[in-house]
Length: 390
Image (cartoon, rainbow, N blue to C red; front, side, top):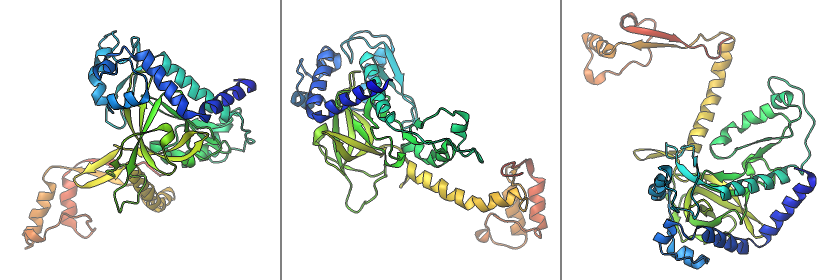
């Protein structure tokens, strides 16, 4: 993209964001004019209306399961105006990270254009910046610029589940700046990273008001819960507000209406309003609302797991060093026959012990020859660790 084209793109973005409220109304009108004949909109009696008030009062909020019957018809080859005025000729497939299985989502020429708009905008802001000189390679430090000397920066998804990899990525990228990718999902695009100088942990995304119609469900934390990056909180919801009605430092769930046939669709993303660029909000991604491992009353988020693994890695450092200088031998895993620990129990009882006092051994000393003999005799397979050795 030539320099002049970058400046034109930035000027266009500035113009769109100066009056984001008007652009949002125009964008919704355009979406509804294009898709007014869609079966989904007719079902709720929209009747060709294109104003914000009618749309919000007639069309309910939805999730993917609400649209599955309509999308499945498109998958099966139905070319009638199910979700959009024109037939859907392409479908994207989500990663399935949250629900455990991929989801089909409609994709059309208008969504392709919004994708290009997001890329053009963030590309223009990125290429305003200068880059540093290449550093020498040492212990894989700076391997990326060493392999690709013309690289100017490292660009990718660096929030959410990708955040744990930032430390390693910084090591490999050396002097190259890390630039967080723009904010989007299989359902559609939300915002562009217009300040690529920010570290990924602090990145915000300016919503492009002409790429879709956006609403935000205000979320209030229950009294006594001060945590922010917690997907397990049962938030108190209020009625959705418009793009220009959000408030800085408040938390919301994103709702989108797209050119691809998604109407008032709940993304399930929790965001915090960090600031405004002109009249459009800048969002900071907090977490996925539904990404929680729940076992009985215990609920663990992705962040909980990340912190647990990081703490465990710190505890492992001493072991790794000892293995490398061979002061500790490799771990050995032995597979035992079924009933082995019952045989150890029988041995314990033969010595006069009571069943109520028996505990399955977690450590067997070298002097406990009988138990060692039982374990060795019942071993069916042996595996030695090759990790951390020389």
